[in-house]
Every structure is written in structure tokens, then in C-alpha cells.
Image (cartoon, rainbow, N blue to C red):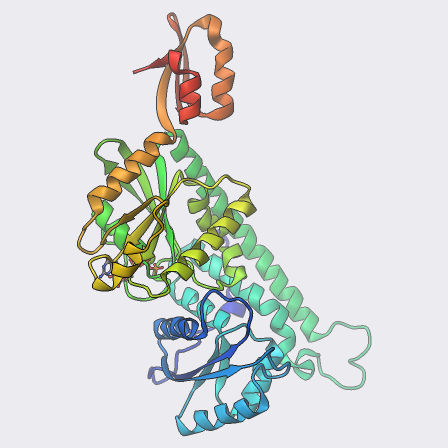
Length: 439
Ligand SMILES: Nc1nc2c(ncn2[C@@H]2O[C@H](COP(=O)(O)OP(=O)(O)OP(=O)(O)O)[C@@H](O)[C@H]2O)c(=O)[nH]1
Ligand SMILES: [Mg+2]
């Protein structure tokens, strides 16, 4: 891969300060009646956890109820004044808005705050992703999301800065600095996207070859910090990074897992979800999210101790449904995995979980419920696709077309006794061709 110059996105962590002391921040929220699944306090709790993950500390919260945001500054003038005083009195470095701000809103609020930086929820999430990206693919994905976020905001540098020179003579047809910058960023995005497409192609090929080998693919999905990586570690006896930080995992990790009554399968851990996940990130992470979309079974891992359990379950389901729809695939079967049930606080959510849904209560930490989960996985997979061998008499060769249409044909051998076929197929196809099945 050609060397990529990350200049326009090479910003150090937003929250890094020179003396390495954590930045002191105030969180700001405007309560709007916009149907957000998380209430203001829970959303701010989440913002505080994001800030903590990024290395900052929350020193206070400022909440304002409004029918709609103030156009210029998001919060009203009185609140802005209050915020300025708080910042001054509490020695604040940073203000984080729990929403998406326009460039001019950021500029206007900053100019009222005298040296305090202002960022929004998306910038904070992008910052954490930038800190946590490890592999080439992760770094590319974050770089693209960052640039796409930056592009419409380039105008935010102000007319004076954006224009070459400025003043008489610069207002004619020629190209403004802003246009040059935009074109530069667009070209960067295009280049990065080409590189990413190469990696995505490789990933798709790998997935196809795993499919061809007849290995089932199970994906761990769910809210960030639910315990997906811990569950992979428990099931596969591994030690990938699991920690009480948000978005600890960005890059998919795949491990082999031997199911006692089923054989070997592949288990993939991937990036977690969050409320109002920036859509540039979802787009950029499409190729890693495809590990979930094209799996044979999804384990939806949930933190059963979370007071906002139901809401987060809904958020996760919505994100998954969007991904399936975008790719035009039928959703794979799903098992709800209620994790952290070693903790007392999980009681309420496990007891009140809807009866009709396939679910298992486990603890990735203690291993409690692990056997049950394995059995449940085996049940679902046996109902799904299986690697089978068929023997068709030569005169029934036409039946092969059904297999080609509905199954993954792994191997075909024309022998004296008939056509030997190995294929991975679902229950329906197995049923239709059951008289040709061998073993
Ligand atoms: N008590 C308890 N803690 C758990 C359990 N499973 C995970 N944890 C803790 O929950 C935190 C998050 O776990 P991870 O496995 O990193 O969660 P994740 O879903 O992979 O999170 P991201 O990759 O950041 O999206 C860690 O501090 C784990 O130790 C559990 O069953 N019981
Ligand atoms: Mg993880």
C-alpha cells in the first residue's frame, strides 16, 4: 500500500494537554423533545464515560430545557453567560456539548468562553476512535470518518482565513483557499477510500473462503462495554483486550471455537455501538460491520446491570436493522446474551426480559451460564446451514442446479457410482434433497 499522508486528520487526541494533566470539562445538554431513546441524565452519564475514556474529567453539568436550540450558540444567552462564569471559576479547559454543533456554533460559544475549547459529542467519539485504532484498516476507517466530518466544516475557519489574501482583487473568479482546502480533503478521502476498498475486498474474500470451508460464523454485537470481548475470551480461552473503557475494540478479531456437539465455528468480536453513533463512523466501518451482517448467527451481548437496558437494546436493534437493510440481507438468527449476571444489579433486567425472545443469562467473568449458551448456539446453528455430502445418480444430475442456487457448493466429483457433492446448505435444501444425502 502506498504511503498515506494523514496530515489533515493528524490531530493529537483532543483531550491531550502538554503537561498531561487530564483536561477539566463541563458537559452541556439541551433538553429537546426529540424522541431520543436515552433521557438527558443517562445521555450525560454516557458522555461522561466517553470523556473519561478519552482522558478528561467531568467537573460539572449544565442543562437547559428549550423548545429548539438557539441558532447561534445552541444554548441561550443567559445560559452561555452562566457557562462562561463556571468555566472561569472552576478552571475549565474544555466544554463538551451532548449533541452535534455546527462550526459557527462552536466558534460563537468559544468566543464567549475566553480560551476554553468547545467540542461536540461526535468529535469526542471520533477522538476515542482515533486513539484506539490499531490496525491499518481501523486507522483508515477513522481517518475517513474524521475527514468526512471535517469537510463540511472547513468553512468554519472564517471567510478571512479561507480566502487567499483577502480584500480587493481576491473576490474575482480565482480559487479561494477554502476551495483549495476542500478539493484537497476530497482527494484525500477518495484516496483513503480506495485503500479501504482494497482491504474490504480482502476481507470479503476471506469471508467467502471461510464460507466455502463450511465454517459457521458467529458474530458478537452489542452496545459498547457490554462485555463482547470478555465473552470471546471466555468462550475461546483467549486474552484479547477487554476493559472498562468505551470502544476498546475497533478491529474485528476472529477466533476458532470448538462446540462439543457441533464442531468448529468461527467467533468474531467487533466494534460496539452507542446512542447516536456518528453516521460517518458507521459508513466508514461498514467493512468491519459486515462481519456481523454476513454472519450465520449474531450473539447480541447486553450488560444486564445497566439501568437503561431496554433503551440500549432498542438502540442496538435499530443500528443492526439499518445495517441489514443497507446491505439488503435477511437478518441472521440472533440470541440475546444477558451478560454480567454475576452482579446483583442484573436481577431486574434478567427477570423482566421478554419471554418470547431467544435469550441466555451468562457471566463472561465467572463463566456462569456458559454451557447453556453453547447449547443454545448449537441448537440455532443446527437449524441453520450445515456442511453435507450428497450422492446423485448420474441421471439425477439436474438436481445439482438446486444446490448451486441455494447452497455453497464446496466440491463436485464425478465418480463411477454417481456425482459426489459437498455443500453447505440450510435445513430447507437438506429436506428437499434428503434422499441424496449420505452420512
Ligand atoms: N462483573 C462483570 N464484569 C464484566 C463481565 N463481562 C465483562 N465485564 C467487564 O465489563 C467491561 C467491558 O468489557 P469488554 O469485554 O471490554 O466489553 P466490550 O463489549 O468488548 O466493549 P468495547 O469493545 O469497548 O465496545 C470490562 O471492565 C469487563 O471486565 C461480567 O460478566 N461480569
Ligand atoms: Mg471489546
